[in-house]
Image (cartoon, rainbow, N blue to C red; front, side):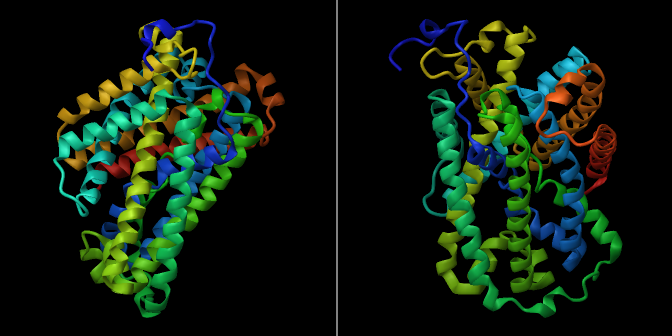
Length: 413
Protein backbone atom coordinates (compact mmCIF):
# COMPACT_ATOMS: atom_id res chain seq x y z
CA UNK A 1 0.00 0.00 0.00
CA UNK A 2 3.04 2.29 0.37
CA UNK A 3 3.63 2.18 -3.36
CA UNK A 4 1.73 4.77 -5.35
CA UNK A 5 -1.25 3.60 -7.28
CA UNK A 6 0.22 5.01 -10.45
CA UNK A 7 3.36 2.92 -10.07
CA UNK A 8 1.31 -0.25 -9.97
CA UNK A 9 -0.49 0.20 -13.29
CA UNK A 10 0.13 -2.52 -15.85
CA UNK A 11 -1.79 -2.83 -19.10
CA UNK A 12 -1.08 -6.56 -19.23
CA UNK A 13 -2.63 -7.24 -15.81
CA UNK A 14 -6.16 -8.59 -15.79
CA UNK A 15 -8.90 -8.90 -13.21
CA UNK A 16 -8.47 -12.05 -11.16
CA UNK A 17 -11.04 -14.86 -11.43
CA UNK A 18 -11.59 -15.24 -7.71
CA UNK A 19 -15.39 -15.14 -7.34
CA UNK A 20 -16.99 -18.50 -6.41
CA UNK A 21 -20.56 -19.76 -6.29
CA UNK A 22 -21.13 -18.72 -2.67
CA UNK A 23 -19.80 -15.25 -3.52
CA UNK A 24 -22.33 -14.95 -6.35
CA UNK A 25 -25.12 -15.80 -3.92
CA UNK A 26 -23.83 -13.39 -1.28
CA UNK A 27 -23.52 -10.53 -3.79
CA UNK A 28 -27.03 -11.09 -5.15
CA UNK A 29 -28.68 -11.62 -1.77
CA UNK A 30 -26.64 -8.82 -0.21
CA UNK A 31 -27.71 -6.32 -2.86
CA UNK A 32 -31.40 -7.24 -2.68
CA UNK A 33 -31.81 -7.61 1.09
CA UNK A 34 -30.87 -4.17 2.33
CA UNK A 35 -32.99 -1.22 3.32
CA UNK A 36 -36.19 -2.47 1.68
CA UNK A 37 -37.02 -5.29 4.08
CA UNK A 38 -36.86 -2.80 6.98
CA UNK A 39 -38.86 -0.06 5.25
CA UNK A 40 -41.34 -1.64 2.79
CA UNK A 41 -43.30 -3.98 5.07
CA UNK A 42 -45.22 -1.21 6.87
CA UNK A 43 -46.42 0.81 3.83
CA UNK A 44 -47.40 -2.34 1.94
CA UNK A 45 -49.45 -3.45 4.96
CA UNK A 46 -51.18 -0.05 4.90
CA UNK A 47 -51.94 -0.46 1.20
CA UNK A 48 -52.91 -4.12 1.03
CA UNK A 49 -53.36 -5.47 4.57
CA UNK A 50 -52.75 -9.25 4.64
CA UNK A 51 -52.94 -9.04 0.84
CA UNK A 52 -49.34 -7.76 1.04
CA UNK A 53 -48.32 -11.43 0.85
CA UNK A 54 -50.15 -11.76 -2.47
CA UNK A 55 -48.43 -8.59 -3.68
CA UNK A 56 -45.09 -10.10 -2.71
CA UNK A 57 -45.89 -13.28 -4.63
CA UNK A 58 -46.85 -11.21 -7.68
CA UNK A 59 -43.62 -9.20 -7.37
CA UNK A 60 -41.56 -12.37 -7.72
CA UNK A 61 -42.89 -13.00 -11.24
CA UNK A 62 -41.09 -10.18 -13.11
CA UNK A 63 -37.95 -10.89 -11.10
CA UNK A 64 -38.03 -14.52 -12.22
CA UNK A 65 -38.20 -13.26 -15.82
CA UNK A 66 -35.20 -11.01 -15.27
CA UNK A 67 -33.34 -13.74 -13.39
CA UNK A 68 -33.65 -16.20 -16.29
CA UNK A 69 -32.55 -13.57 -18.82
CA UNK A 70 -29.57 -12.61 -16.67
CA UNK A 71 -28.65 -16.24 -16.06
CA UNK A 72 -28.56 -16.81 -19.83
CA UNK A 73 -26.57 -13.64 -20.54
CA UNK A 74 -24.14 -14.39 -17.71
CA UNK A 75 -23.55 -17.88 -19.09
CA UNK A 76 -23.30 -16.79 -22.74
CA UNK A 77 -21.28 -13.56 -22.35
CA UNK A 78 -19.74 -13.22 -18.87
CA UNK A 79 -17.96 -9.87 -18.54
CA UNK A 80 -17.23 -7.34 -15.82
CA UNK A 81 -19.37 -4.23 -16.12
CA UNK A 82 -22.04 -6.36 -17.79
CA UNK A 83 -24.90 -3.83 -17.78
CA UNK A 84 -22.70 -1.44 -19.77
CA UNK A 85 -20.97 -4.00 -21.97
CA UNK A 86 -24.08 -5.91 -23.01
CA UNK A 87 -25.98 -2.74 -23.95
CA UNK A 88 -22.94 -1.38 -25.80
CA UNK A 89 -22.27 -4.57 -27.75
CA UNK A 90 -25.77 -5.80 -28.54
CA UNK A 91 -27.86 -2.62 -28.77
CA UNK A 92 -25.73 0.49 -29.44
CA UNK A 93 -22.70 2.14 -27.81
CA UNK A 94 -24.80 5.17 -26.89
CA UNK A 95 -27.34 2.96 -25.08
CA UNK A 96 -24.55 1.40 -23.05
CA UNK A 97 -23.15 4.84 -22.30
CA UNK A 98 -26.59 6.17 -21.29
CA UNK A 99 -27.40 3.18 -19.06
CA UNK A 100 -23.96 3.35 -17.43
CA UNK A 101 -24.28 7.05 -16.62
CA UNK A 102 -27.73 6.50 -15.14
CA UNK A 103 -26.21 3.74 -13.04
CA UNK A 104 -23.40 6.04 -11.90
CA UNK A 105 -26.04 8.44 -10.57
CA UNK A 106 -28.14 5.57 -9.21
CA UNK A 107 -25.21 3.85 -7.49
CA UNK A 108 -24.13 7.09 -5.86
CA UNK A 109 -27.67 7.63 -4.57
CA UNK A 110 -27.87 4.00 -3.41
CA UNK A 111 -24.65 4.31 -1.43
CA UNK A 112 -26.00 7.43 0.27
CA UNK A 113 -29.39 5.86 1.07
CA UNK A 114 -27.87 2.67 2.44
CA UNK A 115 -25.26 4.45 4.52
CA UNK A 116 -27.76 6.92 6.00
CA UNK A 117 -29.94 4.01 7.18
CA UNK A 118 -26.92 2.05 8.44
CA UNK A 119 -25.78 4.99 10.57
CA UNK A 120 -29.32 5.46 11.88
CA UNK A 121 -29.31 1.87 13.16
CA UNK A 122 -25.84 2.23 14.65
CA UNK A 123 -27.13 5.37 16.32
CA UNK A 124 -29.39 3.15 18.42
CA UNK A 125 -26.23 1.88 20.08
CA UNK A 126 -24.02 4.96 20.14
CA UNK A 127 -24.69 8.51 18.94
CA UNK A 128 -22.48 9.65 16.05
CA UNK A 129 -22.43 12.56 13.61
CA UNK A 130 -24.08 11.49 10.35
CA UNK A 131 -21.79 12.86 7.63
CA UNK A 132 -18.43 11.98 9.26
CA UNK A 133 -19.72 8.49 10.05
CA UNK A 134 -20.85 8.04 6.44
CA UNK A 135 -17.39 9.10 5.28
CA UNK A 136 -15.82 6.44 7.51
CA UNK A 137 -18.13 3.75 6.09
CA UNK A 138 -17.27 4.77 2.52
CA UNK A 139 -13.57 4.64 3.38
CA UNK A 140 -13.76 1.13 4.88
CA UNK A 141 -15.65 -0.22 1.85
CA UNK A 142 -13.21 1.49 -0.52
CA UNK A 143 -10.17 -0.09 1.15
CA UNK A 144 -11.77 -3.56 1.23
CA UNK A 145 -12.56 -3.41 -2.48
CA UNK A 146 -9.16 -1.94 -3.36
CA UNK A 147 -7.36 -4.87 -1.72
CA UNK A 148 -8.98 -7.46 -3.97
CA UNK A 149 -12.23 -9.05 -5.06
CA UNK A 150 -11.59 -11.99 -2.72
CA UNK A 151 -11.35 -9.67 0.31
CA UNK A 152 -14.62 -7.92 -0.56
CA UNK A 153 -16.32 -11.23 -1.45
CA UNK A 154 -15.24 -12.96 1.76
CA UNK A 155 -16.61 -10.06 3.79
CA UNK A 156 -19.82 -10.30 1.79
CA UNK A 157 -20.12 -14.03 2.48
CA UNK A 158 -19.55 -13.57 6.21
CA UNK A 159 -22.30 -10.94 6.36
CA UNK A 160 -24.61 -13.23 4.37
CA UNK A 161 -24.21 -16.03 6.92
CA UNK A 162 -24.98 -13.67 9.81
CA UNK A 163 -27.96 -12.20 7.95
CA UNK A 164 -29.54 -15.57 7.23
CA UNK A 165 -28.95 -16.67 10.82
CA UNK A 166 -30.62 -13.56 12.28
CA UNK A 167 -33.60 -13.92 9.91
CA UNK A 168 -34.08 -17.55 10.95
CA UNK A 169 -33.91 -16.54 14.63
CA UNK A 170 -36.41 -13.71 13.99
CA UNK A 171 -38.93 -16.09 12.44
CA UNK A 172 -38.34 -18.69 15.19
CA UNK A 173 -38.87 -16.29 18.11
CA UNK A 174 -41.91 -14.71 16.40
CA UNK A 175 -43.68 -18.02 15.69
CA UNK A 176 -45.22 -18.54 19.17
CA UNK A 177 -46.74 -15.04 19.08
CA UNK A 178 -48.28 -15.33 15.61
CA UNK A 179 -52.07 -14.90 15.63
CA UNK A 180 -53.52 -16.49 12.49
CA UNK A 181 -56.59 -14.27 12.76
CA UNK A 182 -54.28 -11.45 11.62
CA UNK A 183 -54.20 -13.00 8.13
CA UNK A 184 -57.98 -12.73 7.67
CA UNK A 185 -59.65 -11.30 5.72
CA UNK A 186 -56.84 -11.70 3.20
CA UNK A 187 -58.19 -8.97 0.90
CA UNK A 188 -59.14 -6.43 3.58
CA UNK A 189 -58.10 -3.62 1.22
CA UNK A 190 -59.39 -5.30 -1.93
CA UNK A 191 -57.50 -6.22 -5.07
CA UNK A 192 -56.80 -2.52 -5.65
CA UNK A 193 -54.64 -2.47 -2.54
CA UNK A 194 -52.73 -5.56 -3.67
CA UNK A 195 -52.03 -4.02 -7.09
CA UNK A 196 -50.94 -0.72 -5.51
CA UNK A 197 -48.48 -2.59 -3.26
CA UNK A 198 -46.78 -4.51 -6.09
CA UNK A 199 -44.34 -1.71 -7.14
CA UNK A 200 -43.16 -1.41 -3.54
CA UNK A 201 -42.74 -5.16 -3.23
CA UNK A 202 -40.72 -5.32 -6.44
CA UNK A 203 -38.07 -3.10 -4.82
CA UNK A 204 -37.37 -6.00 -2.47
CA UNK A 205 -35.85 -8.01 -5.31
CA UNK A 206 -33.94 -5.36 -7.24
CA UNK A 207 -30.27 -6.29 -7.56
CA UNK A 208 -30.69 -10.06 -7.25
CA UNK A 209 -28.66 -10.44 -10.47
CA UNK A 210 -25.82 -8.13 -9.38
CA UNK A 211 -23.10 -10.78 -9.52
CA UNK A 212 -23.25 -10.66 -13.34
CA UNK A 213 -21.50 -7.28 -13.05
CA UNK A 214 -18.32 -9.11 -12.00
CA UNK A 215 -18.79 -11.83 -14.63
CA UNK A 216 -15.20 -11.51 -15.83
CA UNK A 217 -13.97 -12.44 -12.35
CA UNK A 218 -16.19 -15.47 -11.75
CA UNK A 219 -14.79 -18.99 -11.84
CA UNK A 220 -16.73 -21.25 -14.22
CA UNK A 221 -19.28 -18.52 -15.04
CA UNK A 222 -21.29 -20.72 -17.40
CA UNK A 223 -22.27 -22.95 -14.49
CA UNK A 224 -21.95 -20.69 -11.47
CA UNK A 225 -23.84 -17.62 -12.69
CA UNK A 226 -27.15 -19.37 -13.50
CA UNK A 227 -26.91 -21.55 -10.38
CA UNK A 228 -25.95 -18.60 -8.17
CA UNK A 229 -28.83 -16.46 -9.43
CA UNK A 230 -31.30 -19.34 -8.89
CA UNK A 231 -30.12 -19.88 -5.31
CA UNK A 232 -30.24 -16.11 -4.64
CA UNK A 233 -33.84 -15.86 -5.86
CA UNK A 234 -34.94 -18.82 -3.72
CA UNK A 235 -33.19 -17.62 -0.55
CA UNK A 236 -34.37 -14.03 -0.99
CA UNK A 237 -37.98 -15.15 -1.47
CA UNK A 238 -37.85 -17.38 1.63
CA UNK A 239 -36.33 -14.58 3.73
CA UNK A 240 -38.92 -12.03 2.64
CA UNK A 241 -41.96 -14.27 3.04
CA UNK A 242 -40.77 -15.51 6.42
CA UNK A 243 -40.05 -12.05 7.78
CA UNK A 244 -43.18 -10.38 6.34
CA UNK A 245 -45.53 -13.15 7.48
CA UNK A 246 -44.01 -13.09 10.98
CA UNK A 247 -44.40 -9.31 11.27
CA UNK A 248 -48.02 -9.44 10.06
CA UNK A 249 -48.87 -12.41 12.26
CA UNK A 250 -47.45 -10.82 15.41
CA UNK A 251 -48.46 -7.17 14.99
CA UNK A 252 -51.58 -7.44 12.88
CA UNK A 253 -52.55 -5.19 9.99
CA UNK A 254 -53.15 -1.92 11.87
CA UNK A 255 -50.11 -2.02 14.16
CA UNK A 256 -47.86 -3.11 11.31
CA UNK A 257 -49.11 -0.35 9.00
CA UNK A 258 -48.55 2.29 11.71
CA UNK A 259 -45.07 1.09 12.69
CA UNK A 260 -41.98 3.12 11.78
CA UNK A 261 -39.73 0.15 12.66
CA UNK A 262 -41.87 -2.95 11.96
CA UNK A 263 -39.22 -5.63 12.46
CA UNK A 264 -38.01 -4.03 15.65
CA UNK A 265 -41.57 -3.76 16.96
CA UNK A 266 -42.23 -7.38 16.00
CA UNK A 267 -39.16 -8.64 17.85
CA UNK A 268 -40.01 -6.60 20.96
CA UNK A 269 -43.63 -7.84 20.88
CA UNK A 270 -42.37 -11.42 20.59
CA UNK A 271 -39.62 -11.54 23.23
CA UNK A 272 -39.38 -8.09 24.83
CA UNK A 273 -36.42 -5.73 24.76
CA UNK A 274 -33.95 -8.57 24.24
CA UNK A 275 -35.24 -8.66 20.65
CA UNK A 276 -33.74 -5.23 19.90
CA UNK A 277 -30.09 -6.37 19.55
CA UNK A 278 -31.17 -9.08 17.10
CA UNK A 279 -32.80 -6.56 14.74
CA UNK A 280 -29.93 -4.09 15.07
CA UNK A 281 -27.43 -6.82 14.15
CA UNK A 282 -29.65 -8.01 11.30
CA UNK A 283 -30.03 -4.48 9.95
CA UNK A 284 -26.31 -3.83 10.24
CA UNK A 285 -25.26 -6.89 8.24
CA UNK A 286 -28.10 -6.58 5.70
CA UNK A 287 -27.39 -2.94 4.93
CA UNK A 288 -23.62 -3.39 5.25
CA UNK A 289 -23.65 -6.20 2.70
CA UNK A 290 -25.73 -4.06 0.33
CA UNK A 291 -23.25 -1.21 0.64
CA UNK A 292 -20.32 -3.51 -0.10
CA UNK A 293 -22.04 -5.20 -3.07
CA UNK A 294 -23.21 -1.88 -4.51
CA UNK A 295 -19.72 -0.42 -4.35
CA UNK A 296 -18.26 -3.56 -5.92
CA UNK A 297 -20.50 -3.46 -8.97
CA UNK A 298 -20.22 0.36 -9.15
CA UNK A 299 -16.50 0.02 -9.78
CA UNK A 300 -16.98 -2.62 -12.48
CA UNK A 301 -19.00 -0.55 -14.90
CA UNK A 302 -16.65 2.40 -14.34
CA UNK A 303 -13.84 0.00 -15.22
CA UNK A 304 -15.68 -1.27 -18.31
CA UNK A 305 -16.30 2.28 -19.52
CA UNK A 306 -12.64 3.09 -19.02
CA UNK A 307 -11.56 0.06 -21.04
CA UNK A 308 -13.67 1.08 -24.02
CA UNK A 309 -12.72 4.76 -23.89
CA UNK A 310 -16.19 5.96 -22.88
CA UNK A 311 -14.47 7.37 -19.78
CA UNK A 312 -10.77 8.16 -19.27
CA UNK A 313 -8.73 5.02 -20.01
CA UNK A 314 -7.03 5.17 -16.60
CA UNK A 315 -10.27 3.79 -15.13
CA UNK A 316 -9.75 0.61 -17.16
CA UNK A 317 -6.39 -0.14 -15.57
CA UNK A 318 -5.85 -3.02 -13.15
CA UNK A 319 -3.58 -3.04 -10.09
CA UNK A 320 -0.72 -5.48 -10.72
CA UNK A 321 -0.66 -6.71 -7.13
CA UNK A 322 -4.30 -6.73 -6.06
CA UNK A 323 -5.83 -7.36 -9.51
CA UNK A 324 -8.53 -4.78 -8.87
CA UNK A 325 -9.67 -1.82 -11.00
CA UNK A 326 -8.03 0.51 -8.52
CA UNK A 327 -8.62 3.81 -10.33
CA UNK A 328 -12.27 2.84 -10.80
CA UNK A 329 -12.37 2.19 -7.03
CA UNK A 330 -10.91 5.66 -6.42
CA UNK A 331 -13.49 7.23 -8.74
CA UNK A 332 -16.39 5.37 -7.08
CA UNK A 333 -15.08 6.44 -3.67
CA UNK A 334 -14.87 10.07 -4.81
CA UNK A 335 -18.42 9.95 -6.17
CA UNK A 336 -19.70 8.45 -2.90
CA UNK A 337 -18.04 11.26 -0.96
CA UNK A 338 -19.57 13.79 -3.37
CA UNK A 339 -22.90 12.07 -2.71
CA UNK A 340 -22.75 13.43 0.82
CA UNK A 341 -23.95 16.69 -0.77
CA UNK A 342 -27.06 15.09 -2.32
CA UNK A 343 -30.55 16.01 -1.04
CA UNK A 344 -31.57 13.86 1.91
CA UNK A 345 -35.11 13.37 0.55
CA UNK A 346 -35.53 9.58 0.37
CA UNK A 347 -38.17 9.69 -2.37
CA UNK A 348 -35.70 11.47 -4.65
CA UNK A 349 -32.95 9.02 -3.74
CA UNK A 350 -35.09 5.90 -4.20
CA UNK A 351 -36.21 7.09 -7.65
CA UNK A 352 -32.57 7.78 -8.51
CA UNK A 353 -31.74 4.19 -7.55
CA UNK A 354 -34.68 2.23 -8.94
CA UNK A 355 -35.32 3.88 -12.32
CA UNK A 356 -31.76 3.23 -13.60
CA UNK A 357 -31.99 -0.36 -12.33
CA UNK A 358 -35.23 -1.02 -14.18
CA UNK A 359 -33.93 0.61 -17.37
CA UNK A 360 -30.90 -1.67 -17.03
CA UNK A 361 -33.24 -4.68 -16.87
CA UNK A 362 -35.02 -3.53 -20.03
CA UNK A 363 -31.71 -2.97 -21.84
CA UNK A 364 -30.35 -6.37 -20.79
CA UNK A 365 -33.55 -8.05 -21.99
CA UNK A 366 -33.20 -6.35 -25.38
CA UNK A 367 -29.51 -7.33 -25.42
CA UNK A 368 -30.51 -10.99 -24.99
CA UNK A 369 -32.80 -10.78 -28.01
CA UNK A 370 -30.08 -9.16 -30.11
CA UNK A 371 -27.37 -11.58 -28.94
CA UNK A 372 -29.36 -14.46 -30.42
CA UNK A 373 -29.27 -12.73 -33.80
CA UNK A 374 -25.83 -11.15 -33.78
CA UNK A 375 -23.78 -13.87 -32.08
CA UNK A 376 -25.57 -17.22 -32.35
CA UNK A 377 -22.31 -19.04 -31.55
CA UNK A 378 -22.40 -17.59 -28.03
CA UNK A 379 -25.87 -19.07 -27.58
CA UNK A 380 -24.70 -22.46 -28.86
CA UNK A 381 -21.72 -22.44 -26.46
CA UNK A 382 -23.66 -21.35 -23.39
CA UNK A 383 -24.07 -24.03 -20.72
CA UNK A 384 -27.42 -22.50 -19.72
CA UNK A 385 -29.53 -21.78 -22.78
CA UNK A 386 -33.32 -22.02 -22.76
CA UNK A 387 -34.89 -22.36 -26.20
CA UNK A 388 -34.47 -19.38 -28.53
CA UNK A 389 -38.20 -18.73 -28.58
CA UNK A 390 -38.30 -18.95 -24.79
CA UNK A 391 -35.53 -16.36 -24.48
CA UNK A 392 -37.25 -14.08 -26.98
CA UNK A 393 -40.54 -14.36 -25.09
CA UNK A 394 -39.04 -13.88 -21.62
CA UNK A 395 -36.89 -10.97 -22.77
CA UNK A 396 -39.88 -9.26 -24.42
CA UNK A 397 -41.91 -9.72 -21.23
CA UNK A 398 -38.93 -8.40 -19.28
CA UNK A 399 -38.87 -5.19 -21.33
CA UNK A 400 -42.61 -4.69 -20.88
CA UNK A 401 -42.39 -5.45 -17.14
CA UNK A 402 -39.47 -3.07 -16.52
CA UNK A 403 -41.12 -0.15 -18.31
CA UNK A 404 -44.47 -0.94 -16.71
CA UNK A 405 -42.99 -0.99 -13.21
CA UNK A 406 -41.36 2.40 -13.83
CA UNK A 407 -44.74 3.88 -14.80
CA UNK A 408 -46.47 2.28 -11.79
CA UNK A 409 -43.71 3.49 -9.48
CA UNK A 410 -43.84 7.08 -10.75
CA UNK A 411 -47.60 7.21 -10.16
CA UNK A 412 -47.34 5.74 -6.66
CA UNK A 413 -47.54 8.02 -3.61
